[in-house]
Image 1 (cartoon, rainbow, N blue to C red):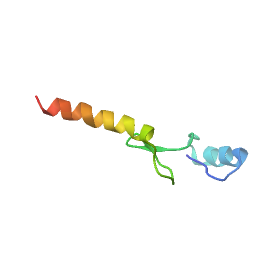
Image 2 (image 1 turned 180 degrees about the horizontal axis):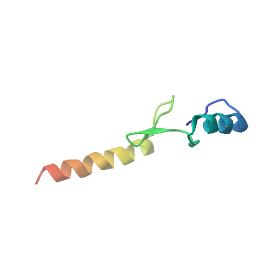
Image 3 (image 1 turned 30 degrees about the vertical axis):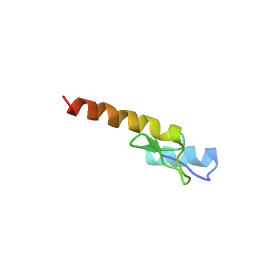
Image 4 (image 1 turned 60 degrees about the horizontal axis):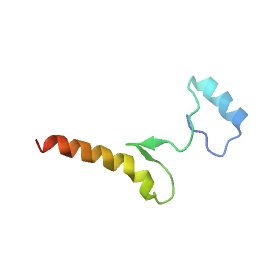
Amino acid sequence: MWAINVEQQTAEYLAGIMGCSLQSAPPRHLGLPLVGKRLLRRDWIPLLDRFEKRLAGTSK
């Protein structure tokens, strides 16, 4: 669970009720951080590296 704009104690209480753990922000999808701002070049590097590896494997 990711708690945004919630006090730590409240977030821990809610996570306990729902039976889940707290995660650090920002959450990631496909290796990219889910943020409300424009991603920097360093944020894209892990995803681009994965694409390059897959493409290299298909060219054989």
